Image (cartoon, rainbow, N blue to C red; front, top):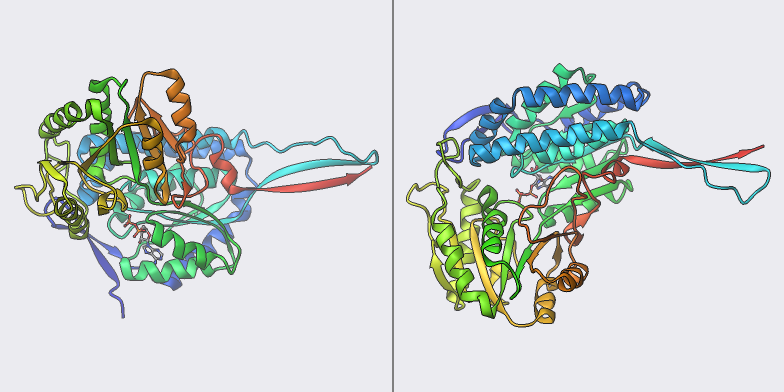
Length: 463
Ligand code: ADP
C-alpha cells in the first residue's frame, strides 16, 4: 500500500513543510470524470464569459503575489525575487489567454463548388491533461492551463511531487475566481504514484490532449503511452542551450547576458545556457569577467534578503552537477571558480566556471541543470554553428554579435526553437516558447498557444 500522504520539504534546510494527499490512479481517473462532466458547461460559455472569469483569477494571483512567492521559495528553493518574478510571469499567461479566448477565429474559404459553401470552425479539443515539473511550480502550469480553459477545454493537472503546494494554491484561487467545479482538477502524488497516474491518464480514451514539461526520457515514455489512444501531445522537454560570443560582440553585455542565462533558478531551467562558445580573441577576457561576476553572486537560502542563488532542488541534482564537473576536469577542463558544494552545505552548490571544455565531456552533451558555466573557445562562424547544432536538443540558443549580416545568418542557421540575440532572457507570454528536435513538440504562449487546444472542424454546406 502506498502511503496516503507524502511530505513536501524545503530544499534550503530539508525541513518538512507540508503533508499532501498521495493520490492514486483511481483518483486521477475520477478527476478525468469530473473534467468530462464539467466540459459541456464550460465549452458552451462564450469566449467573453470565460475571459471575464479568467481575468478574476489573474487579479487574485496578483493580489496574493507575495504569499505565492514565499510559498514557492519554501518548496522550490529559488531566490524570493525570482519567485516573485515567476508569480507575475505565471499570471501573465492567464491575462494573455483570457484576451485570446475572445479572438478564436475560424475561416470561410472560397468554395470551388458553385452549389456549396465551406466553413472551418475552431472547437475545444476536450478533456486535457498537464504533467508539470518543479522548476517553475506556477508558470509551467498556467502556460498550459490558461490556453486550455480559454479555448473551452477542461483539465487535469499533475504537478511535480516536489512542488505541489504552489499548484494547490493556484487551484484555490481559481475556485475563488469562480471557475466552475471540475474545470481545473489537481492530482497530487509522490514520485511512485506519479508514474502510475501518468499511465492511467495517458491510457484514458476520454483524455484528448496531453501537455508535458519535463525531461526528454519521460517525454518519450508519455508520448508512447499516448499512442494507443492517438492523443494530441505537446511536449516541452530538455534543452542544451549554446551561447555564442562572436569577436564583434559587446563583451560587457555578453557577460551580463551570460550571468542571467546561466544562473537563473540556480541553472535549473531548460533554457539555461549549457555551453558557452567564445571566440578565441575574446576568450580569456570573457572567462575572467565571467568569473569575477560569478564571484559576486550571493548564494543563500531563497528567503534571506539579497539571496540571488538558492539551493538545488535535491541531492540527485547535486550529484548530477558534481558528476559533470568531475568528468570535465578529469578530461582536461580547467576549474576557474567554484567546483564544489557551497559552505552552506545541503544542496547549495557554488556557482562554477570551467574553461577548456571540449566535445566528448558529459557537460557538452547532457543537460547539467545546475550553476556551472562551461566555456569552449572557437575560431570561425561556420565552425561554431556546426558545434552549436551538434546536439539532440533544440530549445533555446543565444548569441552576441553587432554585425547585422551575421545576426541574420546565424539566427537562421541555428537549429533551435528560440534564439536570443544580444540578450540572455527571452521568455514572456507573447513569445512562442518551444523547441525542435528532441526538445519537444508544439509552442506555448503567444497567439499560437491556444491553437494547441482547438480542433478544426470543416463544415460543407449545400445551397
Ligand atoms: P525533472 O527532471 O524536471 O524532474 P521529470 O521528467 O522527471 O523532470 O518530471 C516532470 C514531471 O513528470 C513530474 O510531474 C513527474 O512527477 C512526472 N513524471 C516523472 N516520471 C514520470 C513517468 N514515468 N510517468 C508519468 N509522469 C512522470
